[in-house]
Image 1 (cartoon, rainbow, N blue to C red):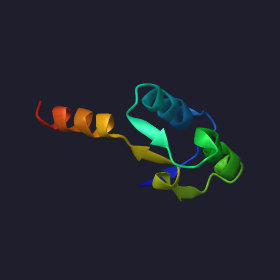
Image 2 (cartoon, one colour):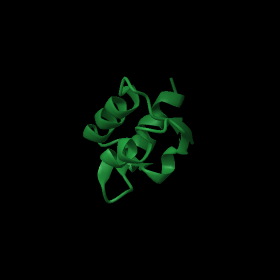
Image 3 (cartoon, helix red, strand yellow):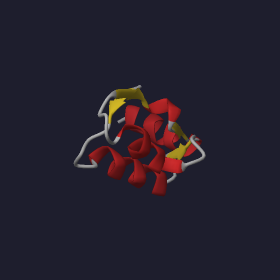
Image 4 (cartoon, rainbow, N blue to C red):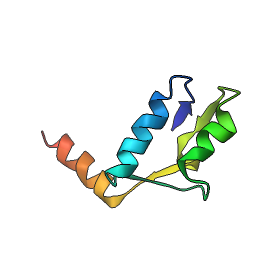
Length: 68
């Protein structure tokens, strides 16, 4: 899933929110802070799957939304 770090931190804030709800979890041992550490200066596109994975709770939420 391609993503790009944003100076306004919207991506980071949304990932923090999803992590707090248990819908995603960090994959990198450095946690979600790895994203700005690796991409905060370059703003290059990167694969978000290198940093977060969708949890089972996140998958269930997506399944429920599809049924609406």
